Image (cartoon, rainbow, N blue to C red; front, side):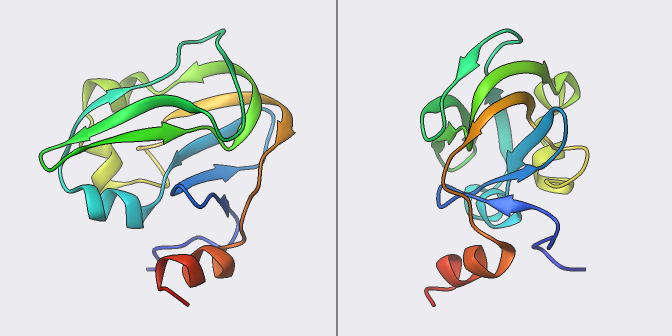
Length: 124
C-alpha cells in the first residue's frame, strides 16, 4: 500500500487535501508516523473562516504537540467528530477515517503533488 495517494495534494507542513466540494483535509502518513500515537485533536469549528498557510488547530501525540495548518482559504463546513472522539484514527487511517475537516474553498495555498511531497520528506 502506498503511503502517498497520488490523487491528493500536499503541503510542506504535512497536510493533505482531496479536491471536492467541499475539500477534505487531513494529515499525511509521514506526519502521523513522526508524531507517534495521536491522543488529542483541536480542530477549527464549523463556520470558522480559515486562511491558507495559517494555523487552524493542533494535534497532540504521546511525543509532542504540532500545529495544524490549513492548505486553503475558505469556510469550515464539517469536522470529523469520530476522529475527535478517537484520535487514533489519524494513525490507523490518515487518508480515510482519520480525515480532519472539510472546507468550502475560496482559494488554494501552495500545494505539492505526491512526488513533490515525497521529494520534500525524503530530503530529495
